[in-house]
Length: 259
Image (cartoon, rainbow, N blue to C red; front, top):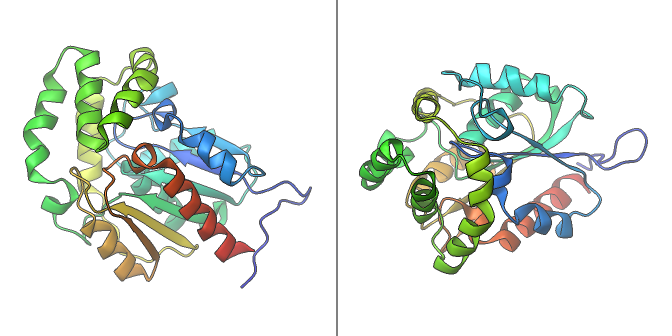
């Protein structure tokens, strides 16, 4: 089916970008620049979960439904339906958004997300990362926390070093509290998804993700009959590890579904 990618005035459908656990819009690093190169006519809109980024002073909700209520209010002025591109915990919220308010959304793209009911907890959060996450939760140094996060989620050491220099000032200006870190982990662990999204859906995942197993995306794609694309080498933060691959894969998906 050919779908319309434009609003009534001819402008292209916005793409909303949503980050995940303890991450805000500044943690996309250079990925938005790559996305603009691939999809230059689509306006990009950035939103943050409560407790992260521009909303870091808020208390993180314990349920994804509360996150969603906040995000719908923040995007009330956006052209609908819009596309949403999300990662990790952001993908869980985006899924619930598409499920409960499909009229808001033209398409759904999830990067390295996971869902209770489709995957076991040990795939949703790989046990080898538990000690590192505990250390991050207790570490008083924001510089060491940022370095530890990137060590966990970015596999390419050169890109990890580059990302640290780009992201650290943003992380220092938008600190996430330990309480919000714990609350976000809790909400992510409890969210359950079984129902197939009613909008075109793309899942992207990393075979070498050391935080969340790619089996989670494989399980979701199988359950929903959704498109799945796997990267052979990247880590959990796939948009940093290979921005061109993510942007091109996403562009190809939109062109296939809507043009």
